[in-house]
Length: 229
Image (cartoon, rainbow, N blue to C red; front, top):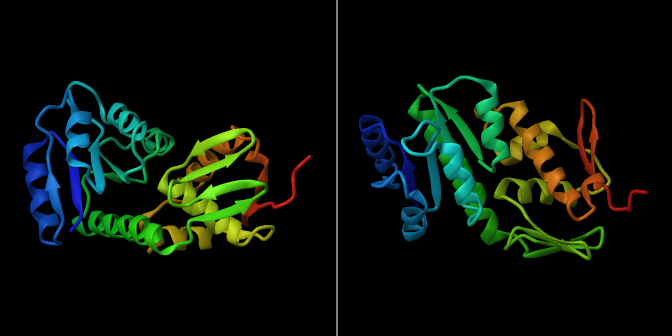
């Protein structure tokens, strides 16, 4: 049974989400003190976090940033705001998905199921290490290390990198990536994939590997094995 921390100050919506997810055998916990969400997160150690953007004290972006600093737990944002920058901001901060209010519960449940299946089945069923361009990729710790240092990736980022490395020097299409990351493309936007890959490439830049992920316009991406001059 997976545990979910729902950071939502709308009592009626919190109750409805908790009841609906309970029907799918998920245990949902709320937040008592919105000024100290991290303490409740640390005590619960949930398998997934759902965060509303508009919260008392600090907004959801703040708490995503704080949680992401100490954990790679999957995070889904909820928001009644419809500005595209909200979704982009959430993904840049390390969120795994974004759901706009009002939403169909079937969509939320499908997203939760896909993320939990991807994150936790993937972690237990895949080989722990892989070498790429002289770097050690640790799928258990979600890290990439070489002589320039170590970077830590989110679950989405490490999964994307794995898919690209498995077909190194070959194009992995955008459709293929989206089908592998999300069970149904209807629940994810093309822009979300772009944000995730750009975020991965930016982190790889920190250890001089960003150029090893090449964009093939209109097709997809390639993980290059040879060093780029």
